[in-house]
Length: 328
Length: 243
Image (cartoon, rainbow over all chains, first blue to last red; front, side, top):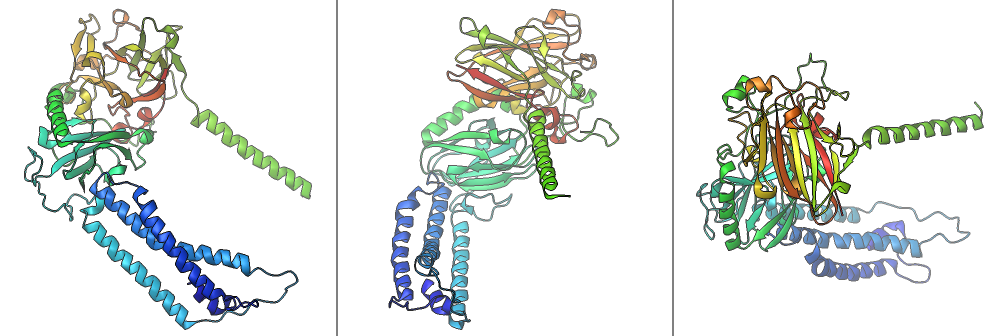
């Protein structure tokens, strides 16, 4: 690339001292690119975010490594050409002559267009494959996901066992300003704790009770918007035990920045113990929850007679009457 | 206009804009409610904190906003603030005088007491004439019953306490109309209200923990979570833990 630009007339191919800039640039670019690509792929890559705690996170880390490796020769070429120009093609004192005129070069232009088009199209194909093969790559796929983990179904919404094709359901409910998590296959209890079993595919069903939030389990490589009245499905398979962070990535009000949790990937046995224990502990409030659904509407509730007599028909909210002088 | 005059005008205008920005930042954006300092009052590893909820805030320019008040440990008066400090590794005994009426929760899961010592809150109901003995409660059904007015929740510590409300239509129609409401204990109050008590342990190290109400009580704001729900000094605040 640098050699091509040089031969196009922006710099002489052979300097007065006999130095062949184009050749030196080409050789330097190839050598530095090989070194750079190896460093990015083998040294930096395993440490790139979001890590490898889950299948989707590992997939994203691979993608970022591939993209970084592909970009390395481009970065090396630009920086090498810039450095070469600053070092060797400086204007000499007293030299008032113009630079060599630049003329079009059909070969270079065609090569450039074809080369960049090929790179972009190849990346588009690669990106599409990487979106499909890991079941949406951890991103929210909407209420009817197209890409699902291979070999899984939602065989039962009322029970779950490890090492079956019945995928674990975890409902993520955003509300100002906290996350709660509901486990329909364990009696439908709802808790502020997010626990997952290692090695088992998980289906997150993400929704909201008020404004738009965004569920971002960063090191799990899962990110899905939480929209009121809508289910947004995302998949992953935790592959290592340990804690992970959950944050809201959609500005949702004054305590948006505090809307975070620490989740935990447990062994399957520990997860089952936690789920059964929590199910019992929360039984008294679980029976007060609405039946499990993919979304909820708190504005229209079947309230008791005292609430109804007070004029209440749902949870609070709504705007003032436009004629109300106390409008905010 | 001469060059020096133009320069002076430009500098003065620039300084005026900067001063205006600083004034707005400190006066409006950076202004915070006063902090009630309970730390010096701790004895034998415990400290008592008293709060109040009211259906209005007549002491501010937002009289129709619901609000918390906190008892000033020095004067004994209820101040319009939601910021308080307590010592680390200490049992905090909280009393909340609940003078507001009931509102259903958006999420019934917040109807369960969590994070308190014993997992309970003790509630006494005052109907305007007599107070019931304090009884332990753990769960409230705010959809079936008129039972909760607000919550006191510190998500960072896993604490959630539904503030019980008076339960009848008549009691909800006879709520205290000024703020802070006059009583500082059940026997002095004339308006129907509840007295909620609970305890929790503060962390062993210092830190600032935000607390909020999970009842959508911001009347007139979308989803009930604007206005007083999003303004320090009303239905949200901070607990500063000091070591």
